Length: 234
Image (cartoon, rainbow, N blue to C red; front, side, top):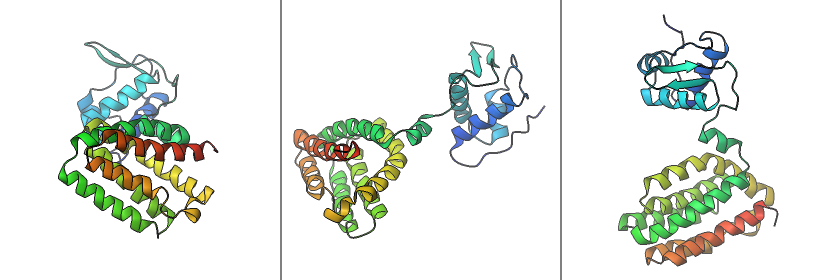
């Protein structure tokens, strides 16, 4: 029997899938003790891939609604979540920008060290272009400047050639962008310095170029610590 779930919009698929499945559980379609349809069936009904279904089930299991049983399938064990149902991207959107920025600093400082050791000519060209775009954006609005700043940082992270670091940085971007635009506007940072920390960003790129891991990580750390001081009200 079809559960009538209906196809989902393209994004964010995991969140939508988890929410749709939770609605079936809390609405009584699948009472406690019921075995869920298989991944293939759910994927077809939701219009997503099996990996998306698997991740949605994992979220609901973490919330206490579902329990996988080895060799038997996935069963409904509760109709109300014991903990909030949210994935990493949702958690980041809910987090304070200060908390997100602290973790970002840890990730990027290490990425800068790796970038200095692993950068290619193509990486350097990308960083040069991003630095030039950041400099040009200093004369534009706050959102454009923040976007250009994030693009430069993304180029440095990409030069580390670690796909996990790259993916982790991408997860931070939506929460960072919103928080940084608000910070720039709240503190009027660009009234005093339109290119905010332009010297440190230029120093970062040059340190990566010459393969100076300490110099690259030091420049990035100084930039991050200055922003964190502002976030903490320092």
